Image 1: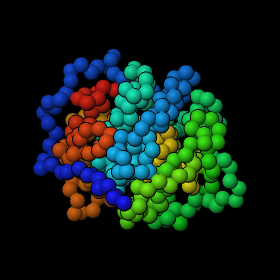
Image 2: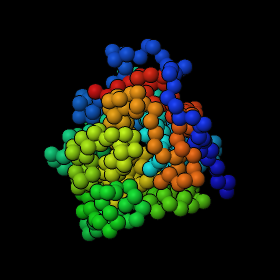
Image 3: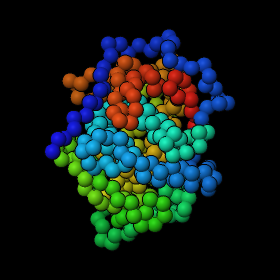
Image 4: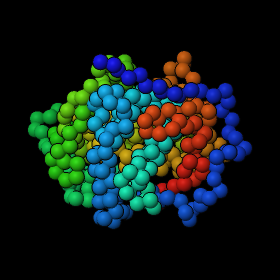
Length: 366
């Protein structure tokens, strides 16, 4: 069958200088009218249910890919995971990671609002990881399996071994962990069978983190039906995404230091939900789990806070290229680097997505 070729569109500019003005900037965005993105537990029970309902709605809408182009995506929601899979080796551990995920979040937020009736005055919620370290994740408002949660942990699988850090994983969690280190097994491991999103069948993946080095196999677009799986790991979150790590991150002197310190924090949230075998731990297809959006909203929140500390120096500051691990033969990220979102939305430049309170956006974290 035909395997689609995805236009990555991550093109470099000739200059990285910050502009004296941005021609698309709107004077209408203010602290008073900005869309508020709030922490999950700060939402009322009904507000959490509205988010869950809108996510479920997207899962029932048809895919936007042309018939036969990407058989493994079955609906509007999994189009997001399919796109993420296709560009994962560009938008991770690179100079465009933060920018690409900021626009990605915005596209999801708009889809929830415009396609599924999510309130226009509500933004994506975020997951502030340290707030959930006082009790097991499977007892939290996120994953306790109640109607206002994101569903339960995966079904407990006995005799599951600890998670071993392999060479590819070590790139994502250094310097906190190294190859050969282990994380105790999570509290689940099997299919999610309780609460919202229980008994969900997905058709994309799973993909080994090894493919982050080699690229995906040619048949990655073919459907492989399996369940939504979780393996909640309190250890991963407490080890990698704790309050001290966040304080250290926000104290970074520049974007290079910020990205280096962010890498293990970012991976901590993914392993905290996916553990060994869950979709959230999948380097490529992690957006299949609705928890993905809360996790990345928190990352965007931290980046926004870092930028706001010194906008003149940090707003248009990038470090790295447009490719995983920044190989020297790939172009450096600049203001004019283009991000192509395929069926999800229009192309944007890094300059256009640099400010949550101007241009394309008008949102803030509270």
